[in-house]
Length: 291
Image (cartoon, rainbow, N blue to C red; front, top):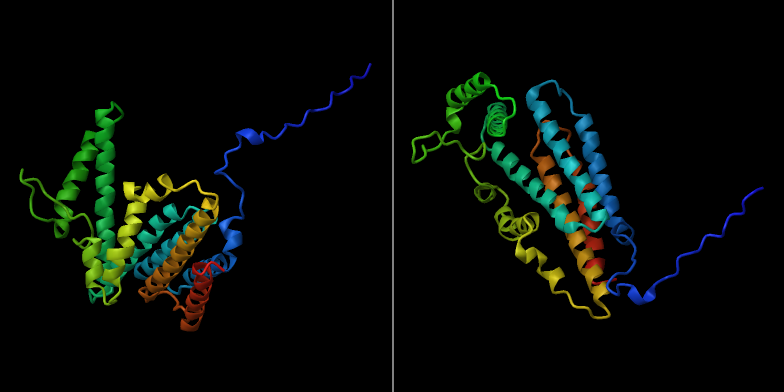
């Protein structure tokens, strides 16, 4: 005898327990489509330039291509985060683009680009050795496999091969290495930039991005003390839209400037770049005016 299926009860809406501070709105990608389209176009152009870089077998040429690719990946990461309304997290990637830019600006001033690139990469090797030593010490302290002979060889290599990155000895006499390949902090590199705006960008934008990156108390205040007025949703959306468009604009501008510091990759057509910045500026005006 065949069983008859009981009709499934549909869940009833519980309007009485609904959180009045939660509402459904269109995604940032939908609301801000023109800005996201430009962001996608910039990333696609960067991808094409990296793939079309001639002579990539030369490590110096490859270096420029890889820096460009890192920038392109930054654009894509920013886009993915902003599409879901996470501008607070996206600015950490924008901050990284700023750091890449000031480092490439400084590298370009050192005269011999090949030697400067080699120095940059040698510092990367030093960082890799430090990472392996930290891992080995962690393994030793936690009872994991630990090769003392291998660690001794790494320490010997570290002490004898990177004297150009050594600073003043510590108080206990131990060797002290620079924290960066330049021996300078980001602020100093921004002040050394040939761009008059770079130091101002550091003081205003980079500092704000750093607050969001590290989730400082000030970065959380707006949400903590946001009121429960009837128009709170509209105010929150308007604020997020402005922050999103600002982040897209600065990310695109910094990426284009980074691209311009890489002489071994195909150049960006100035007219194309101007079209992107003009398009973003025009759209940003409509967002700021609330249209």
